[in-house]
Amino acid sequence: MTATGKTREAVIVFFDAVIERRFSDADKALDEVRGRKNANPEFQEGYIKALEGILTSVRSGDERDFFNRASTTEEGLEKHSKDFRELLMKGRPKPFDTGFFSAWSDLVHYRMAAKK
View 1: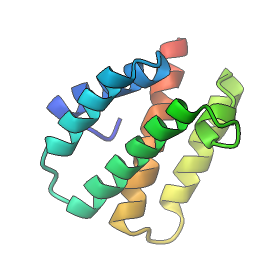
View 2: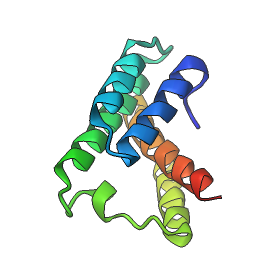
View 3: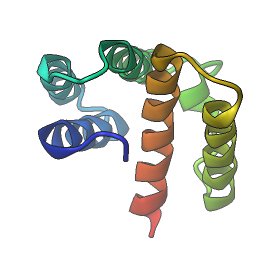
View 4: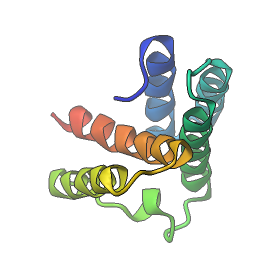
């Protein structure tokens, strides 16, 4: 996982809450992540935007959103992990993009670890 220390703890609480559809808990965890300082503010902004998008997607239940249509089988999660890794390694992504895709990658890895 990209996040470390107290931020990591808040991100894990966020992921748990989102998956279990406990939206007020997810909001609180997201506020805690927002309140943490990061050495790279652009990376942090991208990471937070991804978390906000994940929460919005789950709340809406819209089948067109990635979170709601993505496969959660072991094979599907492995594919998504590979796809996000490729996006992060392609060229020289801006810190915002790195943060954004790192958050999605963290979610996929979190779900993979939870299945084991």
